[in-house]
Length: 364
Image (cartoon, rainbow, N blue to C red; front, side):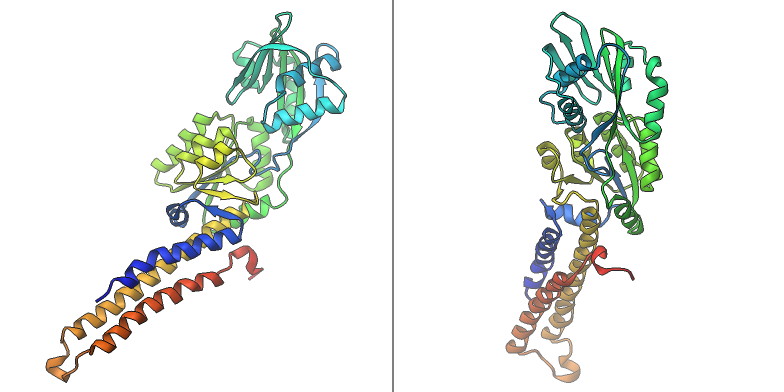
């Protein structure tokens, strides 16, 4: 009797599974994350930078009050230094117009909303989503028609208010990743329910969900709302994976049973997740799940093999057949059987090296 094979059964398969995942651009931080990924029933995805490229650009600008150069100078000042993709798009738009940032004071960032500050002569500035401005008492009716038109085109709308009055709104387009639709279909074919959670508005989220083929989504969410939504799914009996890339996604990534961080995302998101996708594609999530399932199946095969040898050979060595056949196991045969059980486990685990995720197998 020797526990070598039992001791090898799980770690060697996990080690090879982690290596196999790395070959496909999936960095697994813990063996536990790899194993739990095989049990996922629901995958929650962020929109910006996950389903989309994360490189948005301003496609429409509607100036309602003031001159465009002055408005863009305020926008550039408010977004200067921010790492948010929408801020980068607005800064690029101002730079393309040759506008330099104005001087502002009292800058403050509002999580899930936008930013606020004051001009040097004391005028209040607000730049962000509709909820931020409405909570500050800004009347958005002057831009409602234009905003609705942009949202129907799946644009993200960013509003600028100066001294409590709507001054401008911007339509920002962030195209889908080229393989998002195919990757979502692959995940659904693997038996996962895909749910989109986004801080964007309802109309834009609905347009993206239709284009991607996602039936269930939640819009207008703050970071704590995403966390609560994942908790609700877990309480309903779902095993939940979360894919995100930004600071706002960190609480949800940490709460999920398995967090998948986009490698090009923020350090906070990567630290909060158990698995990092170096290539940024949702195909990496599908590959990780398929590799996880193959790894778990391999572990079970190893355990069956290891237990099988001991279950069969220990009674024979103990003499159960001796009264009937006079058969006993000599020490040499017992030693060979012990070695053979370890060789079987290691050989079976190495079969994982030949595994290929579905995307590489081609059409059936």
